Length: 172
Image 1: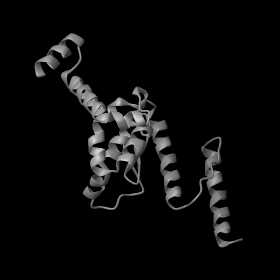
Image 2: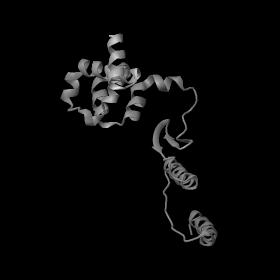
Image 3: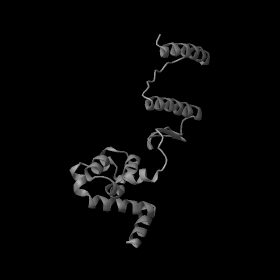
Image 4: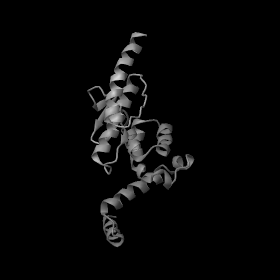
């Protein structure tokens, strides 16, 4: 089998690791074909999720696994497949929102990825907006978007906003 994969990788000009990955996908598909056919799983649903079925079934109920594989993205399914074992490894409290680089995590799960292909200033702006929105969501608050035309308007708005909010919170 190893020689066959070596030969095949040369013939197709694919890396051996890619061949092994597709071999794992095929084995998982054959092993779980009945369940995958039952849920209508197809190549459009992401065959690269299939190698993670085994781990998911170790941590989750079968029905939950096969419902999730159809509806989740690859990264979501990888996180899902870790199941309770991932949570057990964490000794610290998982923060509601955490931003690492260009990735936003909610309750320890990847929620938003801001493209690194946009200008750094715009990326930083989006991450700040997302951070404020998540903090409001965590505290049960509301976000009220206000568009101002420039920095001068922004400063004037902040002054008025602070005064009005103080009155609102006092109950006036």
